[in-house]
Image (cartoon, rainbow, N blue to C red; front, side, top):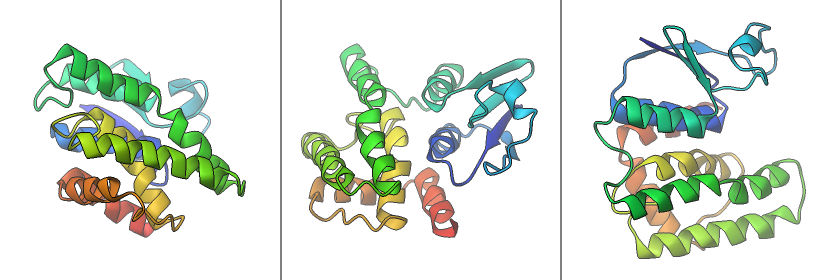
Length: 191
């Protein structure tokens, strides 16, 4: 059985919680207090970050890598498109995630200039979602799981108005119907 080392407030962990739920993978959860990390978590991940998954003697960190592993280890239901080009585009979007996270975290730290940069990135997602139903393409997948935790936190915890981005709003409503994302909305509400 997989063990997930997790923290509710961590959006990177949310990515993996969503993927595990989408895949229906049974797992145990060990909650990590990010304000007082146990020394042993550094044995699982030398930088002390979560999520970390452990299965028997196999230990893996970094949410994007963990989610790719889960996609390969548990291929049904698939969270990447069958077409190689569409898979590559979804992976590229995950690879470029820092374009969104940098202004997001800068804004959280109080950098007023970051709001314009965040809006620019939200606009790029909005344009993409005008052309396709999901970030991963035609169906919900890894790219959607990679972005939705930050979009929810920006909206619900930071008061970012998403209405200037109507395709993004529609996407949030669409993915919120999924039990995996609805569970994450509940988590964000308790933070």
